[in-house]
Image 1 (cartoon, rainbow, N blue to C red):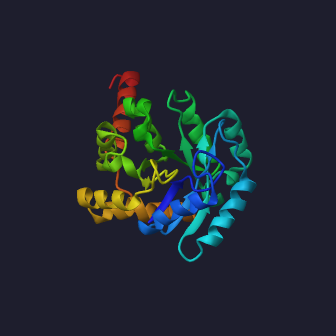
Image 2 (tube, helix red, strand yellow):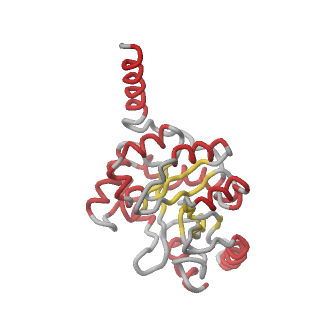
Image 3 (cartoon, rainbow, N blue to C red):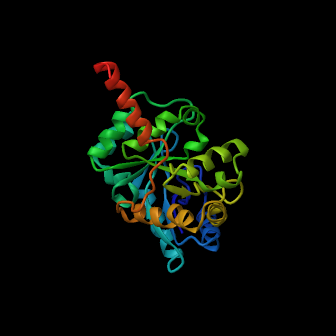
Length: 262
């Protein structure tokens, strides 16, 4: 499995504090069947984003884990003005393995009003936004039309492994399974931070998906799609998300009816 959202690098954010804790966390993922991890330290106002430090410490981890785990580098990108401006100047600084995909994290207390244009501008610049853990954002769960619009325009969705088996409570579990059932979800990732409390558990998530939706869905969300993201390649063989393009077409017909009286 490929885990593309993971706070593995020690001493840079709210993940592991020491090299030993990072190695312990990585070993838990290896034991779980994970072969590739993207280390994604926060890039927000609370944790300064330090690419040189991130790469230096990732190299240390790669050496210690050689032959057991392949590591990549990205970030957990906060949509601040400064971050967005810097992204357009140097997208490879933030994207996964310096290629085309960017993990985007929304704050819990609001959604920027111009985010649709920001996502459009990102894609014009060759960056594909991946909206992280929408199931844990009450605003997004209360306004699914926002997500539908982003999906229609090419954004991707990543949900948290633990949400699939009740880690965040039954309401979030129900929400994430509805999104999976409706084919809104492209990727499952652990968003692991440390062993106690925010552990990886990708293997358990894979089994839940396999039992409820079949092997193909589990492989698509935990292996094939995240592998494409890791390698910077387009996703393949995606089912049509339910209610996204149909609703968009109905909205366009409604606008035309009001304009032309049809």
